[in-house]
Length: 196
Image 1 (cartoon, rainbow, N blue to C red):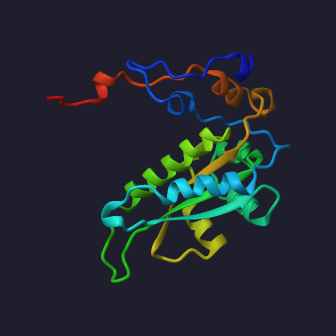
Image 2: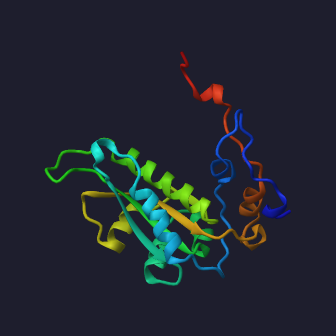
């Protein structure tokens, strides 16, 4: 079974925007296709225009294309299964949060704001025909060393971005099974604790 013959549309309790309903996180990326500079820029622009606490805009990004030493360095600093599949993504993006202001005051919402920016990036990328997979399994110290990341920036996650590949291209049975497994979410009534 391929992902093209399997519906990946979310089953929702009420209709939601098509881009959100169709968005999912594959592990198989087409290693033969590159992403245009325009599509990368559009995704980063969507992140740039995200909301943030007091307009602090605490997000920063390291963007690396497949085939570059920077892309390889990011792959080397992924954990577990992530390292097995993510190298085929056309672009890897390290998502960093600026955790303190210029005066040293902690930016308490920096990670939250970064999450919003990456969500915007994800939706824009999907709108533009790309797929995205977020990874929290990263070697923070390794990324710091590889890119000489300043102490005021915290690597939070890595985004794999590219065009969808075939599940059969994945190297392990476990990954292939995950690629075609039904999408599931907790019911909404388990998530909303109070609704007055």
